[in-house]
Figure: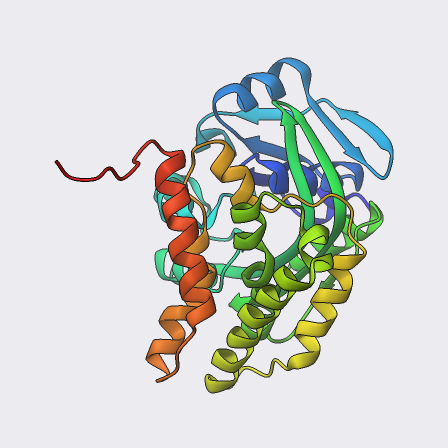
Amino acid sequence: MNMGSAVPGAVAVAGAGAVGCHYGAQLLRGGAKVRFLARGAQLQALKRDGLIHRTGGEERHYRVEAVGTPEALADCSVWLLCCKTTGLAALLDQIAPFVDRDALLVTLQNGVRAGEITAGRFPGWAVAVASAFIGARIERPGVVLHSAAGHISLARWQGDHPAIGPLLACWRAAGTEARLVADGRLMLWRKMVWNCGFNAICAITRRYARAVAEDSELAAVAEAAMGELVRVANAQGIALTGEDVARNMAVTREMGPVKPSAWQDLERGRPTEVADLNGEVVRSARACGLDAPVNRTLTALLLALQRDAAGDVGRPAG
């Protein structure tokens, strides 16, 4: 299906990292017109050499339209917000003058707050939230490696938009499992189960997710972190169960070499999303009169490593 004929204008991928490049490449493959908002070496590589997308043992090369400022995206009817959670508020401020009132905004952030943050910044606009379960990383500027999973779910968060159906159909045409779900809040918390179990632990131990799941002691920590999340979600009326924990453990044992985002961020000296993942569980637990000691410990440890990676290493006084 050529989504370009079904949806006026183009799809803007705002944030051309691993996730944005993967799902943008799949839209290109499905026939959509896509523009990438990028910066730095990634912008230069996309403009000069195009996008190389490696998935399933295949390599595809796309000539792409990449821009460094959002003015060139003003006619886009769909905006995929693919930055990290830590950069979402700044991205929304950057693009706000150029998002058409009839456009659809789709969040792809980890955590559970992206929908409400985006809807608050764009009251009255159509907003959808997405849950992208994927292993992907930038190998070098302009080259993205898709190593595991890749399905995506969307839910309406604020209003409705006629582009939602064609957007999903375009991904499906490229071989991506894409679906519309009714309960966006449940969807986001369900995605958090895996992230709270594995993202921080992988970064702290420098182990791929599968290695964590196959190590009995580390797996027990991951299960404990996920169990705390389930209890906190239940206290808020979100219907997660122990089956969500078991399913995530089983899936992870079958994964390829998935290197979660926090580990990649540490290597680059960038802020991680731990405050919006394990830290969110801690805050929500406190609000519900509960405790989440495993998530609190993982948050503290990863924040300390984050400070070290950024060069802000604590030293003894004197």
